[in-house]
Image (cartoon, rainbow, N blue to C red; front, side, top):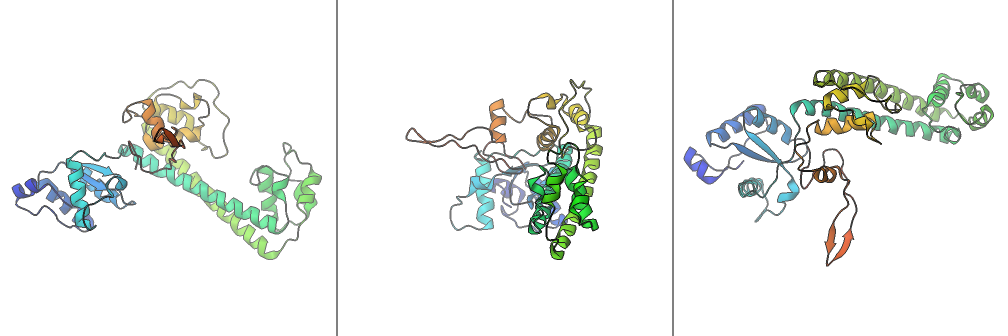
Length: 333
């Protein structure tokens, strides 16, 4: 960690010091910074290692800036930790770095659980693909007659297979009335080889799917509990709302999110409840961090690129905007 030389001289200490990663080391770091008269600290974003440092500094009353490591790649001289921290301190002093946007504490709490829920949904989708692979290896072409293998009909058939049923005629009777394929088509699709090793894999994949489903239910309950005290606005919901999606939480997330934001964002076309939950859990209801609508759209990755050289457009592709990625203007962490 480096501080301006004149502040270090006034405090009678060295301008560069090294600290460990334990909590008492971080508190000693905060003590040293306060003794030097520092009020703003810049941290380089490196994975999740910055989070404990950030939280300790914030708790001790220091203003912590999280800066994009890509903005300080060109360190003069031989690259080392000492060179890095001194270069970072110099760039901040000259106003050449911009702080990342870290939402308020209550938003960060909801965001952590919402991101965990997205991870579980992605992993659940992976296990669905493994089930489909096992079915195809047994030449059970269920995906040819069903749009969603893990819909009502698909789940009933897969669970019956795992339970020991092998008769295609019996399995086809699980057909829901809304399925377009006839029972005869489903029966033909379920005529396969029933190899034992693939049945074992199918059962394991189904068990993992169910386990993740229980974890997702726990996340939904946690999000509901976290959103309850954030509903500070009384909002009248207009209209019946959009049709529930497959991954929509079981609780009344639309009302909870509207009371948090002060407006029902699901009334905007193409914004489902899950999309609104993602947006609010990432940024919260306060958009004053963005200078304009254009800045917000750029942050979302919706604006085309403007890579131009010699009057020729080299690229107009929109930038990817995954959760936690760096942004040149207002990137998030």
